[in-house]
Amino acid sequence: WWRLFDDPTLTSLISRAFDGNLSIRAATERIAQARATLGVSQSGFFPAANLNAGMSEGGHPIDVTHTSYSMGASASWEIDVFGKILNNKRSAQAALELQQDYHQAVRSQIITGVASCYYSIATLKAQLELSRETADIWAKSVQIMKDYKEAGRVTQAAVVQSEAQYWSILAQITDLETSLTQANNSLSLLLN
Image (cartoon, rainbow, N blue to C red; front, side):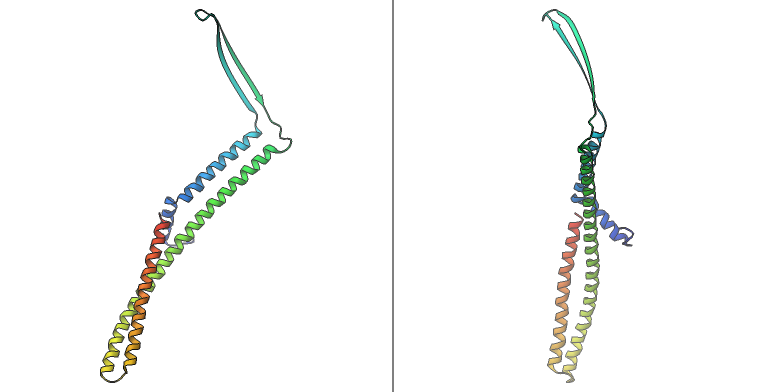
């Protein structure tokens, strides 16, 4: 993903989102659990060995007359006639792949969320700057229209129309500022 976005700021924001995201951590833990389950399921193909040792003392409670030691060993190996061990291994492998895919889906969701917010913020900032410049131009235009009206070159309707356009642009600026605040808040949530 870092090659796709050739923007160091965006890359660092995505990295920050990964570092603090609980869903990524949970998905990573689920992968570790699935790997452990796979390891246990693969151990069914190997023989099992058991060793045990013991000691006992017998005789009168005051005078111990004899001590005996025992040691035992056993080995077993299950033959997978009906495919139980193989099916357990396949099930564990599928669970591991599922968790890996879930982890990738969470990563993709975080990347797209951060990138979307980042580009929305950049777009809103550009629109806001352009709207402010346009509002300054319209403020001058309104003053020119008022001067023209005093000179008798335009009617009051032309002045009102230019003022309406100016106020419309100011309303758009307020909407853009609100949208920019919301986009920044969304990005903050993604970054935890």
